[in-house]
Amino acid sequence: MNTSISSVAHIRTLLESLPGEDAVATAAWAVREPQLTKPAGSLGRLEDLGRWLSAWQGRHPPRLDRVCARVFAGNHGVAALGVSAFPPEVTAQMVANFQHGGAAINQLCQTFGTELQVISLELDRPTADFTQGPAMGEGEFAAAFQAGMAAVPDDCDLLCVGEMGIGNTTPAAAIPCALYGGEAGFWTGRGTGIDNDGLDRKTQVVAAGVARHQGLTGLDILRCLGGRELAAMAGAVLAARLKRVPVLLDGYVCTAAVAPLAAENPKALDHCVVAHASAEPGHRRLMERLNKQPLFDLGLRLGEASGAALAVGVVRAALACHTGMATFAEAGVSDS
Image (tube, rainbow, N blue to C red):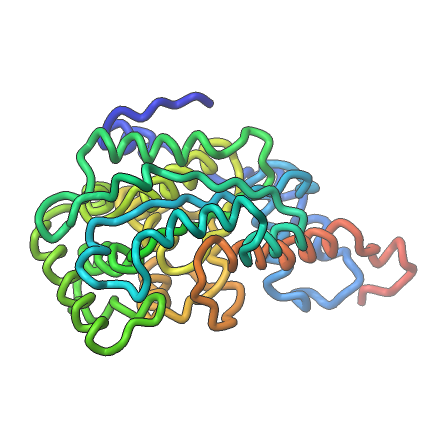
């Protein structure tokens, strides 16, 4: 699939006609699962994950031969407004750390057999301050979205999506605030650990940005209040859907980035599982709006796809159980 994104309207056209679950693969999963040597439903969400893999890969048994993590990095104009505990220079410094293997995401990907690629998006040119105007023009938004789409290989079996960008929990709060309403403080958290004064500033920035861009919907909210790495994550998730690749979403920023896709098409995130519940309070509220349940809650708030990469271990366990367990007949065990 070589889709060149030219406009928001083009993305909306792609979202109008999305592939659904594969009925044949899902039926094959449903035949095997009850025959395995365990009480029905006793493996809980591991069983659900096996079904999810089959349904969205479109095959049974599913495979996890090539698991990919894609971390998108971007810088934000609003970072200059004092919304983060760290300066914008840290984005590029952390990208270098990823490239040298020194970050948490490197260790998690190595542990669970996941291919990592980090995609930097014009780090020397932050997006515009969204309290003064749109964060991105339509051309730069389309380019960032296209970069995300291009990062998903055709032969990927499972995609982990994440980000790096100082200040990006501010657009992550602004997007659901614009999509779903409520006070800015309802969606805004401490991010990298700002103090009370910093949280007040950040909340005011979120409120000002949402007020500036009132009346927008879906992808226009992402363009005006998001950032390049958020647009790229949304692009990667759409490309994964078109290529029949199931997706593990990381925390708050990642989930906020793809929420506008669901605003355009309520089924747009059906192939996605949220890996973990972020310590950012807005993340749980956003998951409720999207009707998503996280796989685990470990108090993570690092970003960089770390929660999604950790969840790969759980998905591999689910696949191993579904494909490797004996059936009642094979084991000579009575199933009644």
